[in-house]
Amino acid sequence: MDKENENVVNNETEEKEVQEENVKVEEVTETTTEENSTKEAEEVENQAETTEEEKVEEVEKEKDVEAVSETEEETKSEEKTEEKKEDKKEAKEAKKEEAEKTEKKKEEKKEIKALEKKVKKVNSEKIVMASIIIGILVIAFGLFGFYFYNTNLKPVVRFEGGSVTTSDFNVYYKTFAPMLQYYGYPADEIPKQIAQKAGIDMIILKRAKDAGVTLSAEDKAKVDEIFNDESQVEQFVNEGIDVAKMKQLYYNDYTITAYLEKLADEAKDEDVIKYIKENSGEDADLYGYDTSHILFKTTDDSTGSELSEDKVAEVKAKAEAALKRALAGEDFAALAKELSEDTGTKENGGQYTMYMDGNTYTEYSDAVKNLKEGEITAALVKSEAGYHIIKLNKKIENGRAKNKTEREEFVDEDINKLSEELDVDETYLKKLVAKISGTSAEESDTETNVDTTTDGETTEDTQSTDATTTDSTDATQTTTTEQNAQ
Image (cartoon, rainbow, N blue to C red):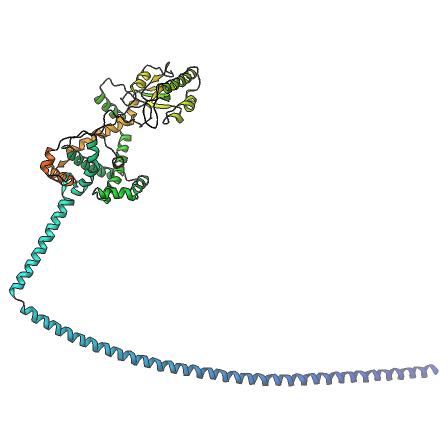
């Protein structure tokens, strides 16, 4: 019983505790609900305030937009007003211009009518006078044309496809006449010689063009350098030479030279050999001689005169010492580089190819003839240049066909035949030369020849070497314009 009472009491106690717990939970729940309600009320209130502010802002923006629109409309209205003013102004100006044009036309009509009245009053005498004036002008222009033709365009030389004009010949004559006079050409032959040269040059230029030969950039630069020299140009002007034509003459000369070199290079060896035999005889020596030499000069480089006997003896002693070394078997090319005074062959071991064409010192040629291949002269060979030690390296059969001098002569022979294609107006030529030189045609006929060559002077030929060749310059050979001008 006691246990049951005890259990009852315990159950009641637990029930009370449960009830109390439930009361606490309900209180907490109510509190939480109240807090949530308060927060929700605050949020609603805040949202309402925000919405009110946004509405105010939107109203203000609408007011601003309306203000801007009103401003733009006012601006457009002002612009339209200005445009109307400009249009009115332009319309007024247009009317004014139209009025001025109308007035101008009226004035022009008046002037035309006045002129018509004047023209009607012109009498026959004035018409005749006008005709005379026109006739005089026609004659004047005709005379000018005739004068211009005679002083510039009238042909001196004619050939198929072209001519040498007066102005062309003028330049040629003033350039080449002094040279031909220097070499002793008869005065009465010089004009025709120059006229023929001018004609031949023009034929060659045409052939060069057909062959595709043109002035090289290097040669053009050489000519331009000459004509950039004010003193040289002034000299041409003082001599009455047309500078532009003179410059073209230089250009032409270089082109002609290039074309002739091309012909010489392309010439057939058998044709060159035939030419040599025709000019030097069937028994002509046709070998090419590959030689080397060591030179000890016996002339003064600055004056070209022979050294004193004492100096020559010293030179000979040096040459004999070198000869002993060469005959002893020392390398000949090395000795030439060390000792030779021939600047043209020294750096090449003294190598010099020669031909029996008369362009080499006789003493040198004779010594070579007596040598065998690989042999050195047993004694010194004395020429005008000095003492030589000579070695024959090789004899080349028909090597003379490669002789540059004779190949050029072979080409020149054909070129000189071109003179047969020229028609020289000798009567006009005589008058023209008299005019250029300032003499009458009669004086020109009676002019005597003057020998202006110097006595006993020779020029050392430096074509291949400055010590192994003799002077073989022929005044009749073509000389470059540049050399003539100098």
